[in-house]
Image 1 (cartoon, helix red, strand yellow):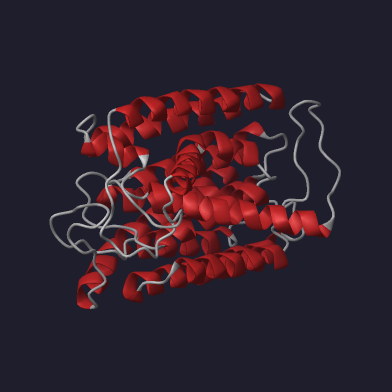
Image 2 (cartoon, helix red, strand yellow):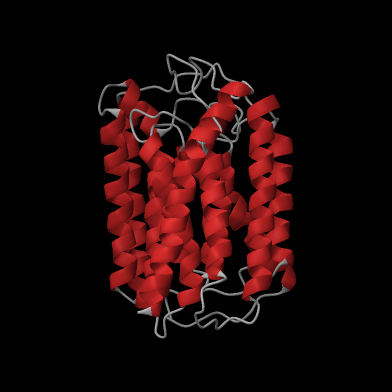
Length: 357
């Protein structure tokens, strides 16, 4: 009963805080001119407020703090220490995103900021020390500090840019992240034995904040998250580590946007373009530009794919099965990209080339 009460308190705190923060985010956006330019990568017809991510950040942070006041068992002696790194790193990358929304940053400044933010997580004991070998089912031995640091930096930067790239259509990034947060919560609260209740409250807080934001961001969106997409990616990346390095879980849930990221980087390099310059070559843009799907249908299709593979991670303990499922998913996505690519060509973007997307 106490666990259910804790879940209700944290989720509703995050949801209510985010809902209350959305009007503030919209007001601040218009008050200080932090809005999108009509046209650009999203090709919207009117300027849109870009500080919507403030609602996610506020809702998540308040709920996480409230979670520490709930009298439940805590198994990790470093929990508060890691939580400090999570909040501090989230604040830094959130502020970086706001700065980019206001003045615009070049790709090197963004990349440097992401590296520094990831370093904060590592300093506060949020790092990948091992993973489960899909071929043997056993854990690998702990790696050297150099490998651990390099892998953690790669993982967190990858997650930040993956979430950022998928934030190109109404409700897309927030909805996918919501599914990932729910899967992480269920894994820690239900699937693991014994349950990691205190750890599960963290992705639950993120889920509540995302739901509050998504109610204003789903098509037709009334607010964008802007540069806060990096914060969202950082939160998902660190929470997957705190929850027991559930990289396989996130890889399956985020497989479609991850594949899109890799596909676009290779495609841009192949055509002699800057891999860090955004365009409308991403899958969701191609589907939209060619009239294949509407923004609402694109979001629902992405949700379905991510939720299906997230469900698979919860119903099996087999690392080999997850590995095969991930490989199968990548093959299907690759075929889909080829099919869509044959009937469409990416449109160049008029927006500033500073965004890693």
